[in-house]
Amino acid sequence: MSDNDRKIRVLIVDDSTFVRRALVRVLRDEPDIEVVGEGRDGLHAVDQARKLRPDVMTLDLQMPNLNGLDVLRVLREELPTRIIMVSSFTKEGAEETFRALEEGAFDFVDKTRVRNRMEFMRLGAALIEKIRLAAGSEVVEKIRQTEAAIEPPPPVPETEDFRPRPEGIVVLGASTGGPPAVRRFIGEMHPTMRAAIVIVQHMPPGFSTGFSRRLNQVSPILVTELEEKQILTAGHAYVLPSGSELTWEQNADGDYLIDLKDAEPGQQH
Image (tube, rainbow, N blue to C red; front, side, top):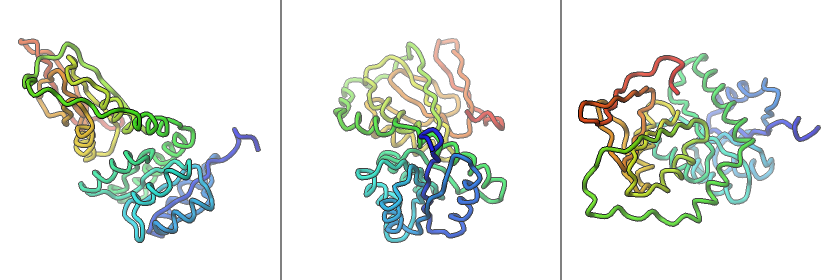
């Protein structure tokens, strides 16, 4: 079998037997994906990963013995396996999700809202897409190596207490694998920049608040979640709320005024 024909070897890790079996059913009919094993808790996951050396691992966040973050930290230095977090997240869990992305996870899938077979199939379709992208991606490793060499951003001068009208708007759109790239991009901004930045990151409802908070912790400019009828200012980055669409217009004073509305089905990007 040539490298082009080789299947993506996937290890499924979850402390729920039901979830593991459901994910196996979702993946088993894909011609380019092979489920090579399962892990029932954190310690078992580490052992299986070391033995099987999968291309991609799906990893639950809350598990006995070692949680998902601990597994990620143990494996990231010794295996090239791409890890996709698959878990049910509370609001606090969203913070842990972004910690996992910062620790090297490729992406995540939220199973919180899976209540029936149709929703699980949609989750499965999203997971399959992320597995394929993860298996062929070197982006995360390059970002991790680059971030290690980046010096902390300079502090914003205390005298800069005004927020002028932006000279332009930069719109940054990202989907699968995007959060670490967006984090690096924002971390390299200059505190005196004269543009406003609008970030459109495709993610489940409820995650954009935590995402904006994590970005703000590493950014030399202010990062917040967008609000309805907000006026954009220079040197400020805004995260579009999950599940929203936005437009903007200039008012009589020349300010950029944001208009938010719920995204139409199929238009969440």
